[in-house]
Every structure is written in structure tokens, then in C-alpha cells.
Length: 276
Image (tube, rainbow, N blue to C red; front, side, top):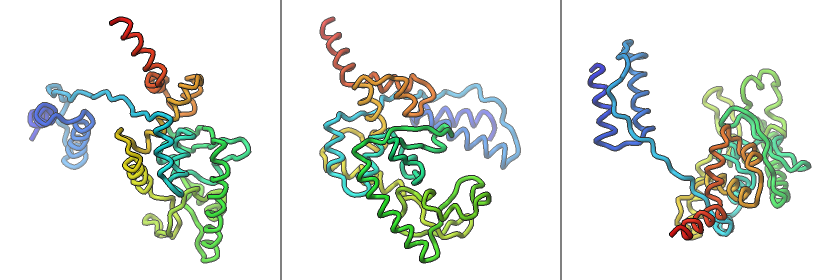
């Protein structure tokens, strides 16, 4: 098959199957890899392809009372992680990959390393989380000390830090804030380590909490981040400050959340009512 068949297939996905733009792009990327890297040929420029329309969806935002209801039915470490997602505007993987050294209880800040944009950023640590987070870390430290006594206690270090600091992976400051329940063997180097908690466990806990709380919105872990930004903007916080806390490159992304603030929605509704 050559260029005409590829164009027909990609058009078929968009027109007949009504797939999302990302699905069509994924199919194109797969074909491009197949032809260039496996078949060692180039099918040229695709000019006659009907593109799938990209859907613009508004982010889901909970009210403050809905957040309280959701967090109230969660327990243990999952509740603490969810509160951190909401209180600091963290992404899911930013939360599970947190290290002990990244939390500053004196300054009430959390430093996030190698975020989505591969840049470090700083966000706030709510006062209400200081005590429960300290208590949690005390339990984690006891677990780490027990691992050391058993000859383990190592953790994965990013980049070339393992070669530069051979013993740093056993130090307390480098341990994960939310470690896994058990040790596991790293398939890359064969080392037995305690990795961070699996992110799917928090996703399942949030999904179950949504059901228990009786909420009907499509809520996930990332929804807490939307709520963090929207509720700050609703309280009158500067949009540029919120943009920095979220790590958004473009302020328009933050402005989308600003438009969902309850006060702004109520204002637009009142304006429409007056026009009617």
C-alpha cells in the first residue's frame, strides 16, 4: 500500500469511525514509523486527508462543598495524597514521585522536580497538612530504617546521580514521600528497591470515593488541580500567581479555569438574564 491507501485509511478513521483527532494522529505516527523505520521507504506528503475535528472540552471543577464531601469519604494515605493534590495543585505523577527533600515545612512550600515542562516549580503546602504529613513521614522513616537493617533501603535516583553519589540512594532525604507497600526488583539493573506507590491505586481510591459521595461529575485525580486553581481565583488571587503555581506556560490555560469560577459563571448568567 502506498500514499493513496494511507490517505484513504486516515480519512476513513475520521469520517466513518468519527475518531478523535489524537487517535487519528496516533494512527498516522504508527504508519510513519512502520514505513520509515521498518520498510525503509517514504510515502511522501499526505495532502488529501480529511482531518478529525479537535474537540474543545471544558475542565471539570467541583465546588468547595463537593471537594469536602469527596475528601471526607477517603481515608489513610489516599486521603492525604488527595488533599495534597487539591491543596497544592499537583498533578498525579508529581504527587507520587515526591521525595522527602522536596517538602519544606518551615517555608510551607513543595518543590516539584522535572514537571510536565521539564522545569522545577514551587507550590504551596497548606497549613492543615503539616501535622498529618509529618506523622506520615515518621511512619515512612521507620519503614525505611527497617529496610536498611534488612540490607535494602535503596531508591531510584534520576539521571546520573547514582554514579555521582553512589550512596545517596540510601539516604532519607531521597526516599519517596509515598512509598510502595513492598520491595520490587528493578528490571533495568536488577536492584531491589522500594519504589513509589502505584498511581493507579490513588485513581481507584478517588473513583470509589466519588461513588460513595454520590457525586455525578466525571471526577478524577486531575480534577483536584482544576479545583485548586479555580478556588484560588474565586478568592481573588492574581491570575499570574496561579499560573506560576500550576506551572502553565501559557496564561490562556489558566484563564480557562478562571472562566469557570462560580462568581464569573453567575455574573454571565445574570447578564444573559438582563438581555432576555
